[in-house]
Length: 380
Image (tube, helix red, strand yellow):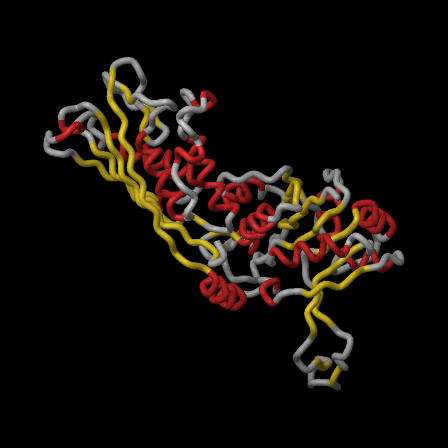
């Protein structure tokens, strides 16, 4: 079964109390929509992810995703139902998981249970039992409402593709609060799977505070260290932090020999216990001859993202007598932050010499040291 995910992030509301639509509000250092996107990317059963945004929100979305790109970005409609229809129109799959971006945390087991339920049902939704007393509200508190047989309905909701398309076509005039309601209206069979309290919707500022506490209990901070050296020689260009630096000599190596990026990559890999750069890009492999080291950075960055982690900070030290690094530090910082998909405030670049001692002091090469701080799920 080919399964795609559709994230609905087209809202314009500000009930969470910030200056941004809530799908772009930050939780644990990244936007709500980014959390949902990473959860779907992490699950092996999800092929593509489509995101629906409001008019004029595409740039905000790309900034929120920090270099990661969905299969397609679609403009939404005035109502949620139209936004979902717009998203479904570009999906070619056997099944789809439709999710609201305001629910940032998606447990992997919920995704698996939803997909499994589609084997025998038209759709499936995660639900939680109602534990609180329910009563009708008015000017005065009214009578209690029986809670037996009543559940909280969450997203993502899973559907066979032909079913959900037909449901939207046949019930275009029904003011449904979720997609399962449309499928039920045409007689479709919806399975219930066990939901999760972490799937609760972010509506108000207090919800963000509560969710921050939940995230903090699930994350741990890990540190990796990287070190690399390359020889200076006439002929090659000098690349540092993804930038070509004017100099009479360049660095020799199998790739573009960007010693700074190599140290950063090793630090990132170390933080998630993923070996070193040579394990992932062997110098004996001809496909990496002359390769841009930015590809190595993207690989390490994506490994962290797929593991459900995030890069918190990178501190890089470049050690050489020449060229002078100081004038290039601002541009290097901007370049490195862009490659990592993080803020420049989370990147620090230092430069030093060895007082003309050793191989760097004699101008024979350049060395670099990096330390990366990464937040990861405790299961990583």
